[in-house]
Image (cartoon, rainbow, N blue to C red; front, side, top):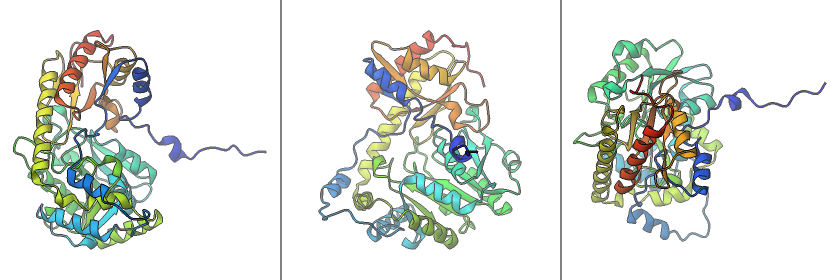
Length: 406
């Protein structure tokens, strides 16, 4: 008898990205002559700094060689200096370079948890957290946050109720993707206290560290006292200097066992991208004026999107405090159907919009079905036009409701 050839349960269970799943529909819409405003993905349109691009032009080696598994010494020193600017004193041995922030998260989950273990996440959360965890057989356990609270953390009791004997870590993203929430000192201290009490790692995704508005300032988990062996930070060049395709991220921790584990993982994949590290080594040459301008521009973009959403009947939204995303509740029956309607059936003067349906950012079944995430990564004129398209689409959508549920 011939055995059936089949895929692994891991392969079958891997969810499609809610951020990229609708891409074929966008391609079809563009082929039909529509202009599609892409608000579904966090791809900055702001030019990379001149200092970074000049560094790229200066590369004159005969080939692009392998580098050390932990990262090029020059880039590690640049990262050490960068963190010192945030009052985080490190040695280069406490930094490990990865192929994007994605590999950083995958390596960290693999280092701290075994198959069958659990990691707590606050939903809505960056959807790939569950994908990375699933690849190594780890379960993401959700703690729900509410839009009415600006997606800030719930009570200590609500979080602690989700901690079990299989819990290995709590994952935190601030400024948050997809909500734009910036957690307060009190919230960080609360999570740290739970990690101390229960012997858990605190995995902090700080990719959007610079992106805070209205006078707020991000606090790194690396500054939490008494957590030196429990905090692991993941980060990336992608957003802060518009280098998404360079695929350069890193891990920061003072825990030597974690660093030893990720080094062995890294040796198996040889090395992170050499050229991306070469250009990233100019990170500290970028003047503060560049980042100040970027933050000011995103804050204005956020305000354009909020103003547009506030004018739409039945839409509920809270002002995001950081990153460049906003989650909003819409008066629709299903945000997936609405997102498909925008691409398949609707246009306003030949224009339509691509958004990310909200349920993909939740692990709890049924949540987020009337939410979407909007990435305000287009210029203000295009964002204004995008809001007009969404407003008109909500009026035309056959599954419209009088108010947003949830």
